[in-house]
Amino acid sequence: MAKLNVPVEALEKYMQAIRDDYARWSSGGPEGLTDVRKRMIQEFNDSIKYEVGSSYIKVVEQNSVHSFIVNKAKKFPVGTILKAASWKAPATNFARGNVFEKYTIRWTGTL
Image (tube, rainbow, N blue to C red; front, side, top):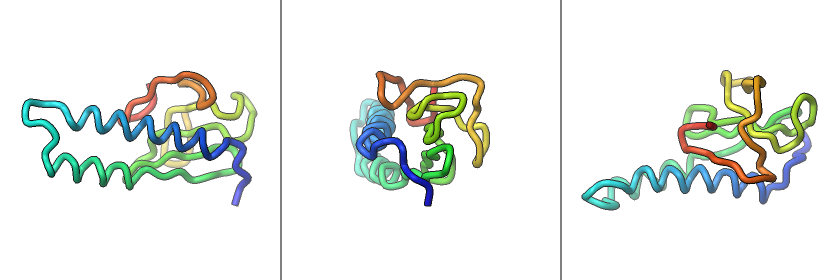
């Protein structure tokens, strides 16, 4: 397994921001937070994981890649948030933020 160069606390905070955004999105509407919505939020929360690679940390939600975080500095510093280009690779055209700084994230992916 590759060495993790981003503190686990920073990854957990990032994934919690994704969970929180999903909960905000899911709980809107006049009917409020129904049992079905509560179950959907719990299933979403349980599905968010990360996989550590040599260059990137892949953040996965359910069956799709949410984003990548730089684990080994090359073009971008460690902690940089990148949009997913495919299941295996990030889009490296520009950074979407950094887990060590203020960032905006949505449950659907990076901005």
